[in-house]
Length: 231
Image 1 (spheres, rainbow, N blue to C red):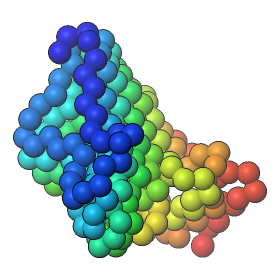
Image 2: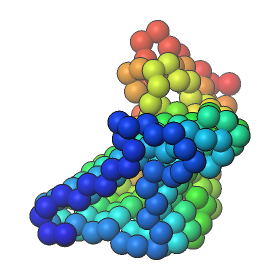
Image 3: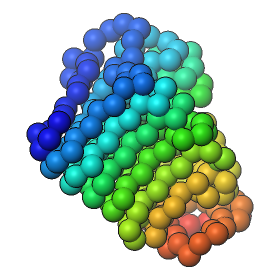
């Protein structure tokens, strides 16, 4: 598409019962070459197990090559079992933007190993901008430690932030049950700055060394009355 926006919505506001994924892009490309945004807004079914809001897999591509933004939102309504993720970016899939921002904002469902945003540790799996900021907002983030990447180009920052007020953050160890990120996961982020937390975030605890191979502004933001703890 050129200049006009692309908007894909599934089950948003309807909350239909059933066993289904909101939106799946499987090996396909969705591209805006002008000023238009790409926006995906998905809500899953409410069954148990593998109720995802949005899934990108098998080298799927969402790309804005002009000034448009990539905006992805969704909710998993999975009610039990396991793996009720909000967003999954898998198997070499990419979310790319030129000068527009990328915003990913999701809620996971209930059940074991259910995460808001999953960036699988697969070769070529990435989130990147040439010149724009990137925001990942969700209560549990699963980011790869070896192969996937997040890159905010041209002096821009990456914001990692819980969606639910009061959510606590642990930095130093990855987790599939709370907002926890390891040093290896943070090493896969390339940006001028990494901002973790926000004005409504709970206590931030740093449990292991966070190191950077290149100069990076690390900014930790806890909400009023909450602490930054080194343990």
